[in-house]
Image (cartoon, rainbow, N blue to C red; front, side, top):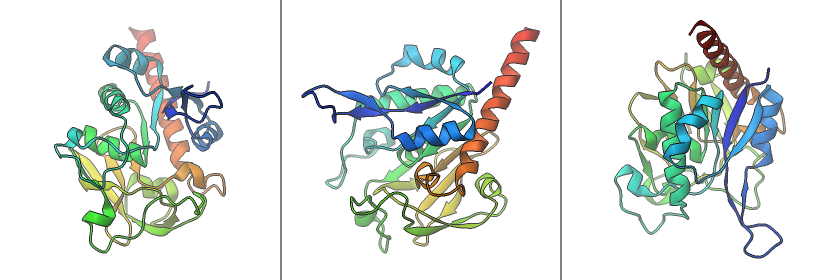
Length: 253
């Protein structure tokens, strides 16, 4: 049985009908999860506390997708002039949902904004804009002229990291589409990858079944080749294991 993987969605105003808002997820996330063996489910960005625990009881894993900036009130900072667009309803929804997932010890893969949400949920902080706050930072930002299938810079993974084990290597060329990044890591988050300019590119949660955050977009790279597919396979395998354990516990209970 394919595990059910929730993928966080975002508000979308691209509908043909004026003032008709939709909830969407990039198809690359859907394809990557499905190709790895999971059944993807889009999660709307306005869930409230009453939804979080019941949802986690039904999901086998969680994928936090990319998107807009996180409001800096969530990590104890005032907004700076270089802050991008925010969706505070989505912030509240995802932070609460993620904390419920962590409490339930669900497998988690966090990508780009999701990588930052994971850090903030665990008490970490963010650079609101790399170009303004990090001297010598590379140009990590999204460019309309640059496909997400195009690599931008290398990342170096720590020896023995879960990410390195999954990807079977220590240095990879990745894409880039962000202007914020981790400043200080959240509680028990281990930094396991850096860009050449020192920007944090991957984190893992210690003593947890499967919880990985990456700053690049592996789901877009999967369209080109299979190098990054093991990240999604790892999520699916952990979700299958968790589902099997839960099923066994319910039979015993």
